[in-house]
Image 1 (spheres, rainbow over the protein chains, first blue to last red):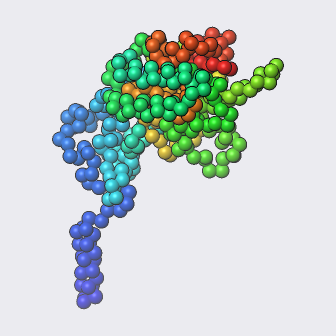
Image 2: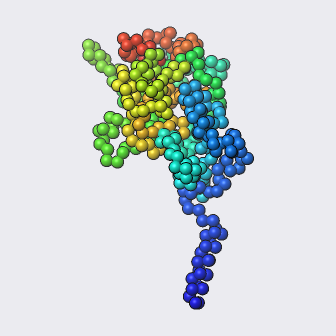
Amino acid sequence: MKGKFGLSLLMALCLGLCGGLGVVYAGEGVEGSAKADRLDACVAPTAFMRRNHFELIEHQRHITVHEGIRKTDNSLAGCIDCHVRRDAQGSPVPVNAPGEFCAACHEYAGASLDCFTCHATKPTGN
Amino acid sequence: MSQPTDQPSNTGRREFLAGATGVAAATVVAPGVFLQSVANAAPRDTAVSSDVRYGMLIDTSKCADGCNDCVTACDKENGLDMLVKPEGADDELWDMQRPRWIRTVKLRNNLTGHVSTLPMMCQHCEHPPCVDVCPTGASFRRADGIVMVDRHTCIGCRYCMMACPYNARSFIHEAVQFKLTATPRGKGCVESCNLCVQRRDNGGTTTACQDACKQGAIVFGDLKDPNSAVSQAMSKYPTVQIRADLKLNTGVRYTDV
Protein backbone atom coordinates (compact mmCIF):
# COMPACT_ATOMS: atom_id res chain seq x y z
CA MET A 1 0.00 0.00 0.00
CA LYS A 2 2.77 2.33 1.03
CA GLY A 3 4.80 1.32 -2.08
CA LYS A 4 1.88 2.04 -4.39
CA PHE A 5 1.34 5.44 -2.82
CA GLY A 6 5.01 6.25 -3.25
CA LEU A 7 4.92 5.27 -6.92
CA SER A 8 1.86 7.37 -7.71
CA LEU A 9 3.41 10.29 -5.83
CA LEU A 10 6.52 9.94 -7.98
CA MET A 11 4.44 9.80 -11.17
CA ALA A 12 2.41 12.81 -10.13
CA LEU A 13 5.63 14.69 -9.41
CA CYS A 14 7.03 13.78 -12.84
CA LEU A 15 3.85 14.81 -14.64
CA GLY A 16 3.71 18.02 -12.66
CA LEU A 17 7.30 18.84 -13.52
CA CYS A 18 6.81 18.15 -17.22
CA GLY A 19 3.58 20.14 -17.33
CA GLY A 20 4.94 22.98 -15.27
CA LEU A 21 8.13 23.40 -17.26
CA GLY A 22 6.34 22.94 -20.59
CA VAL A 23 9.02 20.61 -21.92
CA VAL A 24 9.61 21.36 -25.61
CA TYR A 25 11.86 19.12 -27.59
CA ALA A 26 14.23 20.51 -30.22
CA GLY A 27 12.61 20.71 -33.62
CA GLU A 28 9.09 21.02 -32.29
CA GLY A 29 7.12 24.21 -33.02
CA VAL A 30 6.33 26.36 -30.01
CA GLU A 31 2.67 27.34 -29.64
CA GLY A 32 2.21 31.00 -30.53
CA SER A 33 5.63 31.40 -32.17
CA ALA A 34 4.36 32.05 -35.72
CA LYS A 35 3.81 35.62 -36.93
CA ALA A 36 0.26 34.60 -37.78
CA ASP A 37 -0.42 33.81 -34.13
CA ARG A 38 -0.05 37.46 -33.27
CA LEU A 39 -2.38 38.70 -36.02
CA ASP A 40 -6.18 38.92 -36.01
CA ALA A 41 -6.82 37.42 -39.43
CA CYS A 42 -5.12 36.01 -42.51
CA VAL A 43 -5.28 37.79 -45.90
CA ALA A 44 -8.99 36.87 -45.92
CA PRO A 45 -11.37 35.78 -43.12
CA THR A 46 -10.37 32.45 -41.57
CA ALA A 47 -13.53 30.65 -42.70
CA PHE A 48 -12.82 31.67 -46.29
CA MET A 49 -9.17 30.69 -46.05
CA ARG A 50 -9.98 27.24 -44.68
CA ARG A 51 -12.02 26.39 -47.76
CA ASN A 52 -10.33 28.43 -50.46
CA HIS A 53 -6.63 28.83 -49.69
CA PHE A 54 -5.68 26.60 -52.55
CA GLU A 55 -7.66 28.61 -55.09
CA LEU A 56 -5.62 31.63 -54.05
CA ILE A 57 -2.29 29.83 -54.20
CA GLU A 58 -3.03 28.26 -57.56
CA HIS A 59 -4.05 31.56 -59.11
CA GLN A 60 -1.00 33.21 -57.63
CA ARG A 61 1.44 30.60 -58.95
CA HIS A 62 0.33 31.29 -62.50
CA ILE A 63 0.65 35.06 -62.36
CA THR A 64 3.97 34.83 -60.55
CA VAL A 65 5.60 32.38 -62.95
CA HIS A 66 4.15 33.74 -66.18
CA GLU A 67 3.66 37.44 -65.47
CA GLY A 68 6.35 38.02 -62.89
CA ILE A 69 3.97 39.56 -60.35
CA ARG A 70 5.36 38.99 -56.88
CA LYS A 71 3.79 41.82 -54.92
CA THR A 72 0.69 40.18 -53.56
CA ASP A 73 -0.77 38.76 -50.40
CA ASN A 74 -1.30 35.30 -51.80
CA SER A 75 2.19 33.98 -52.41
CA LEU A 76 3.16 30.61 -50.97
CA ALA A 77 6.36 32.20 -49.67
CA GLY A 78 4.14 34.66 -47.78
CA CYS A 79 2.04 31.83 -46.31
CA ILE A 80 5.16 30.08 -45.07
CA ASP A 81 6.81 33.21 -43.75
CA CYS A 82 3.77 34.04 -41.63
CA HIS A 83 2.64 30.58 -40.53
CA VAL A 84 5.96 28.87 -39.84
CA ARG A 85 6.47 28.14 -36.14
CA ARG A 86 9.77 28.25 -34.31
CA ASP A 87 11.26 25.69 -31.95
CA ALA A 88 12.58 26.42 -28.48
CA GLN A 89 15.90 27.54 -29.99
CA GLY A 90 14.13 29.98 -32.29
CA SER A 91 14.81 28.20 -35.57
CA PRO A 92 11.88 27.70 -37.95
CA VAL A 93 10.21 24.28 -38.09
CA PRO A 94 9.20 23.09 -41.59
CA VAL A 95 5.50 23.77 -42.26
CA ASN A 96 5.07 20.23 -43.54
CA ALA A 97 6.55 18.56 -40.44
CA PRO A 98 4.04 16.44 -38.49
CA GLY A 99 1.62 18.63 -36.59
CA GLU A 100 2.82 21.87 -38.16
CA PHE A 101 0.64 24.37 -40.00
CA CYS A 102 0.24 22.67 -43.38
CA ALA A 103 0.67 19.06 -42.33
CA ALA A 104 -1.77 19.17 -39.40
CA CYS A 105 -4.91 19.42 -41.59
CA HIS A 106 -3.56 17.76 -44.71
CA GLU A 107 -2.54 14.64 -42.83
CA TYR A 108 -5.86 14.46 -41.03
CA ALA A 109 -7.81 14.89 -44.28
CA GLY A 110 -5.53 12.54 -46.18
CA ALA A 111 -5.12 15.22 -48.87
CA SER A 112 -1.60 14.89 -50.21
CA LEU A 113 0.46 18.02 -50.41
CA ASP A 114 2.79 18.42 -53.37
CA CYS A 115 3.99 22.02 -52.88
CA PHE A 116 7.04 20.99 -50.91
CA THR A 117 8.49 18.62 -53.47
CA CYS A 118 9.91 21.83 -54.93
CA HIS A 119 9.18 24.71 -52.56
CA ALA A 120 11.15 25.53 -49.42
CA THR A 121 9.32 24.56 -46.22
CA LYS A 122 10.76 27.39 -44.15
CA PRO A 123 11.89 30.91 -45.00
CA THR A 124 15.44 30.93 -46.39
CA GLY A 125 15.88 34.67 -46.74
CA ASN A 126 16.05 34.60 -50.52
CA MET B 1 13.43 52.18 -67.90
CA SER B 2 13.20 54.63 -65.03
CA GLN B 3 15.88 57.20 -64.24
CA PRO B 4 17.57 55.47 -61.27
CA THR B 5 18.15 52.25 -63.16
CA ASP B 6 19.57 54.18 -66.09
CA GLN B 7 22.38 55.57 -63.98
CA PRO B 8 24.15 52.31 -63.15
CA SER B 9 23.56 51.09 -66.71
CA ASN B 10 25.51 53.99 -68.12
CA THR B 11 28.26 53.37 -65.61
CA GLY B 12 28.34 49.79 -66.80
CA ARG B 13 28.64 50.92 -70.39
CA ARG B 14 31.58 53.15 -69.63
CA GLU B 15 33.26 50.35 -67.79
CA PHE B 16 32.64 47.95 -70.62
CA LEU B 17 34.21 50.35 -73.07
CA ALA B 18 37.06 51.15 -70.71
CA GLY B 19 37.59 47.46 -70.09
CA ALA B 20 38.03 46.88 -73.80
CA THR B 21 41.12 49.06 -73.75
CA GLY B 22 42.53 47.21 -70.78
CA VAL B 23 41.29 49.33 -67.84
CA ALA B 24 39.32 46.97 -65.65
CA ALA B 25 39.86 48.36 -62.15
CA ALA B 26 36.51 50.17 -61.88
CA THR B 27 34.40 47.13 -62.68
CA VAL B 28 34.53 46.00 -59.07
CA VAL B 29 32.58 49.09 -58.06
CA ALA B 30 29.67 48.41 -60.36
CA PRO B 31 28.23 45.32 -58.64
CA GLY B 32 28.12 47.18 -55.33
CA VAL B 33 26.17 50.02 -56.95
CA PHE B 34 23.68 47.61 -58.46
CA LEU B 35 23.24 45.64 -55.26
CA GLN B 36 22.13 48.83 -53.53
CA SER B 37 19.20 49.13 -55.92
CA VAL B 38 18.36 45.44 -55.46
CA ALA B 39 18.00 45.94 -51.74
CA ASN B 40 15.79 49.00 -52.05
CA ALA B 41 13.55 47.85 -54.86
CA ALA B 42 9.98 46.66 -54.39
CA PRO B 43 8.50 43.45 -55.82
CA ARG B 44 6.80 43.78 -59.20
CA ASP B 45 3.04 44.39 -59.11
CA THR B 46 2.29 44.61 -62.83
CA ALA B 47 2.66 41.95 -65.52
CA VAL B 48 5.93 41.83 -67.47
CA SER B 49 5.62 43.33 -70.93
CA SER B 50 7.30 42.92 -74.29
CA ASP B 51 8.51 46.52 -74.09
CA VAL B 52 11.71 45.06 -72.73
CA ARG B 53 13.76 42.13 -73.89
CA TYR B 54 16.41 40.96 -71.50
CA GLY B 55 19.69 39.78 -72.89
CA MET B 56 23.41 39.63 -72.32
CA LEU B 57 26.63 40.37 -74.08
CA ILE B 58 29.65 38.27 -73.20
CA ASP B 59 33.10 39.51 -74.15
CA THR B 60 35.00 36.26 -74.52
CA SER B 61 38.35 38.05 -74.89
CA LYS B 62 38.10 38.88 -71.18
CA CYS B 63 37.04 35.39 -70.22
CA ALA B 64 40.04 33.74 -68.58
CA ASP B 65 40.79 30.08 -69.08
CA GLY B 66 40.19 28.18 -65.85
CA CYS B 67 38.09 30.93 -64.26
CA ASN B 68 34.84 29.61 -62.86
CA ASP B 69 33.51 32.65 -60.99
CA CYS B 70 30.27 33.04 -62.96
CA VAL B 71 29.41 29.36 -62.53
CA THR B 72 30.05 29.46 -58.79
CA ALA B 73 27.98 32.63 -58.37
CA CYS B 74 25.14 31.13 -60.41
CA ASP B 75 25.20 27.95 -58.31
CA LYS B 76 24.99 29.99 -55.11
CA GLU B 77 22.27 32.38 -56.33
CA ASN B 78 20.06 29.61 -57.61
CA GLY B 79 20.64 27.01 -54.90
CA LEU B 80 22.47 24.61 -57.20
CA ASP B 81 25.30 24.30 -54.70
CA MET B 82 22.86 22.90 -52.15
CA LEU B 83 22.26 19.75 -54.17
CA VAL B 84 23.91 16.65 -52.78
CA LYS B 85 25.10 13.62 -54.69
CA PRO B 86 22.64 10.77 -54.15
CA GLU B 87 24.02 8.00 -51.97
CA GLY B 88 25.78 5.35 -53.98
CA ALA B 89 25.61 7.39 -57.19
CA ASP B 90 28.38 7.01 -59.71
CA ASP B 91 30.84 9.95 -59.56
CA GLU B 92 31.18 10.30 -63.29
CA LEU B 93 27.42 10.13 -63.84
CA TRP B 94 26.80 12.72 -61.14
CA ASP B 95 29.34 15.10 -62.70
CA MET B 96 27.69 14.64 -66.05
CA GLN B 97 24.10 14.90 -64.91
CA ARG B 98 24.18 17.34 -62.01
CA PRO B 99 22.23 20.49 -62.80
CA ARG B 100 24.31 23.40 -64.08
CA TRP B 101 22.89 26.59 -65.53
CA ILE B 102 26.23 27.82 -66.86
CA ARG B 103 28.91 25.66 -68.44
CA THR B 104 32.33 26.91 -69.37
CA VAL B 105 33.06 25.94 -72.94
CA LYS B 106 36.35 26.01 -74.78
CA LEU B 107 36.26 26.62 -78.52
CA ARG B 108 39.24 25.95 -80.76
CA ASN B 109 39.60 27.25 -84.26
CA ASN B 110 41.02 24.28 -86.13
CA LEU B 111 42.54 26.46 -88.83
CA THR B 112 44.38 28.90 -86.61
CA GLY B 113 44.55 27.05 -83.32
CA HIS B 114 43.04 30.06 -81.52
CA VAL B 115 41.23 29.00 -78.35
CA SER B 116 38.45 30.98 -76.71
CA THR B 117 36.75 30.21 -73.44
CA LEU B 118 33.16 31.27 -72.82
CA PRO B 119 30.26 30.72 -70.46
CA MET B 120 27.39 28.90 -72.17
CA MET B 121 23.91 29.03 -70.73
CA CYS B 122 20.33 29.30 -71.98
CA GLN B 123 20.55 31.73 -74.90
CA HIS B 124 17.00 33.02 -74.36
CA CYS B 125 16.02 32.63 -78.01
CA GLU B 126 13.27 34.67 -79.60
CA HIS B 127 12.13 31.44 -81.27
CA PRO B 128 13.09 28.83 -78.67
CA PRO B 129 13.10 25.19 -79.85
CA CYS B 130 12.46 24.05 -76.26
CA VAL B 131 9.15 25.90 -76.28
CA ASP B 132 8.24 24.47 -79.69
CA VAL B 133 8.58 20.88 -78.55
CA CYS B 134 7.11 21.12 -75.04
CA PRO B 135 3.94 19.01 -74.94
CA THR B 136 2.44 20.71 -71.88
CA GLY B 137 3.33 24.37 -72.31
CA ALA B 138 5.64 24.21 -69.30
CA SER B 139 8.57 25.50 -71.33
CA PHE B 140 7.63 29.05 -72.22
CA ARG B 141 8.97 32.44 -73.16
CA ARG B 142 7.98 35.26 -70.87
CA ALA B 143 6.86 38.56 -72.41
CA ASP B 144 10.18 40.15 -71.43
CA GLY B 145 12.15 37.53 -73.35
CA ILE B 146 13.14 35.19 -70.51
CA VAL B 147 12.81 31.54 -71.52
CA MET B 148 11.94 29.42 -68.51
CA VAL B 149 10.15 26.34 -67.19
CA ASP B 150 6.89 26.39 -65.28
CA ARG B 151 7.57 23.45 -62.97
CA HIS B 152 3.91 23.23 -62.08
CA THR B 153 3.19 21.92 -65.57
CA CYS B 154 6.52 20.23 -66.40
CA ILE B 155 6.10 16.45 -66.67
CA GLY B 156 9.81 15.74 -66.99
CA CYS B 157 9.69 14.31 -70.53
CA ARG B 158 12.97 16.05 -71.45
CA TYR B 159 12.04 16.78 -75.07
CA CYS B 160 13.26 20.33 -74.46
CA MET B 161 16.67 19.04 -73.40
CA MET B 162 16.99 17.18 -76.69
CA ALA B 163 15.72 20.16 -78.70
CA CYS B 164 18.06 22.74 -77.19
CA PRO B 165 21.04 23.32 -79.52
CA TYR B 166 23.06 24.77 -76.63
CA ASN B 167 22.83 21.86 -74.18
CA ALA B 168 21.60 24.44 -71.68
CA ARG B 169 19.02 22.46 -69.74
CA SER B 170 19.37 20.18 -66.74
CA PHE B 171 17.08 17.58 -65.23
CA ILE B 172 16.54 16.98 -61.53
CA HIS B 173 16.87 13.23 -61.11
CA GLU B 174 16.46 12.89 -57.37
CA ALA B 175 14.40 14.41 -54.57
CA VAL B 176 15.83 17.71 -53.43
CA GLN B 177 16.39 18.16 -49.73
CA PHE B 178 17.57 21.77 -49.49
CA LYS B 179 15.98 24.54 -51.51
CA LEU B 180 15.80 28.31 -51.45
CA THR B 181 12.52 30.22 -51.25
CA ALA B 182 13.35 32.13 -54.44
CA THR B 183 14.39 29.09 -56.47
CA PRO B 184 12.05 26.11 -56.01
CA ARG B 185 13.42 22.84 -57.31
CA GLY B 186 12.16 19.27 -57.27
CA LYS B 187 12.56 15.80 -58.68
CA GLY B 188 11.28 15.26 -62.20
CA CYS B 189 11.52 18.75 -63.66
CA VAL B 190 13.78 20.37 -66.21
CA GLU B 191 15.42 23.72 -65.51
CA SER B 192 17.85 26.20 -66.99
CA CYS B 193 19.14 29.76 -66.65
CA ASN B 194 16.27 32.20 -66.16
CA LEU B 195 18.41 35.34 -66.09
CA CYS B 196 17.99 35.47 -62.30
CA VAL B 197 14.25 35.99 -62.66
CA GLN B 198 13.85 36.55 -58.92
CA ARG B 199 16.09 39.59 -59.26
CA ARG B 200 14.17 40.83 -62.31
CA ASP B 201 10.85 40.69 -60.45
CA ASN B 202 12.22 42.36 -57.35
CA GLY B 203 13.73 45.35 -59.13
CA GLY B 204 17.30 44.08 -59.44
CA THR B 205 19.30 45.25 -62.44
CA THR B 206 22.05 42.64 -62.61
CA THR B 207 22.53 38.90 -62.76
CA ALA B 208 24.62 36.88 -60.32
CA CYS B 209 27.12 35.90 -63.03
CA GLN B 210 27.59 39.54 -64.06
CA ASP B 211 28.20 40.61 -60.46
CA ALA B 212 30.73 37.82 -60.01
CA CYS B 213 32.80 38.48 -63.13
CA LYS B 214 35.89 40.41 -62.05
CA GLN B 215 36.85 41.00 -65.68
CA GLY B 216 33.54 42.67 -66.49
CA ALA B 217 33.05 40.24 -69.37
CA ILE B 218 29.28 40.00 -68.88
CA VAL B 219 26.92 42.90 -69.57
CA PHE B 220 23.26 42.32 -68.86
CA GLY B 221 20.36 44.56 -69.81
CA ASP B 222 17.41 45.45 -71.98
CA LEU B 223 18.11 44.80 -75.66
CA LYS B 224 15.18 47.00 -76.68
CA ASP B 225 16.44 50.07 -74.84
CA PRO B 226 19.00 51.77 -77.11
CA ASN B 227 20.55 53.48 -74.09
CA SER B 228 21.09 50.36 -72.02
CA ALA B 229 24.66 49.25 -71.38
CA VAL B 230 24.17 46.08 -73.37
CA SER B 231 22.65 47.85 -76.40
CA GLN B 232 25.36 50.49 -76.39
CA ALA B 233 28.09 47.88 -76.28
CA MET B 234 26.44 45.87 -79.04
CA SER B 235 26.26 48.90 -81.32
CA LYS B 236 29.93 49.55 -80.71
CA TYR B 237 31.41 46.07 -81.15
CA PRO B 238 30.84 43.25 -83.63
CA THR B 239 28.84 40.54 -81.89
CA VAL B 240 27.74 37.07 -82.87
CA GLN B 241 24.97 34.70 -81.94
CA ILE B 242 26.14 31.14 -81.41
CA ARG B 243 24.61 28.92 -84.11
CA ALA B 244 23.16 31.96 -85.83
CA ASP B 245 22.39 29.65 -88.76
CA LEU B 246 19.45 28.27 -86.77
CA LYS B 247 17.82 31.73 -86.89
CA LEU B 248 16.66 31.57 -83.27
CA ASN B 249 17.65 35.21 -82.57
CA THR B 250 19.29 34.53 -79.24
CA GLY B 251 19.19 37.06 -76.42
CA VAL B 252 22.72 36.15 -75.33
CA ARG B 253 25.40 37.39 -77.71
CA TYR B 254 29.18 37.04 -77.78
CA THR B 255 32.17 39.04 -78.97
CA ASP B 256 35.55 37.68 -80.01
CA VAL B 257 34.42 34.13 -80.60
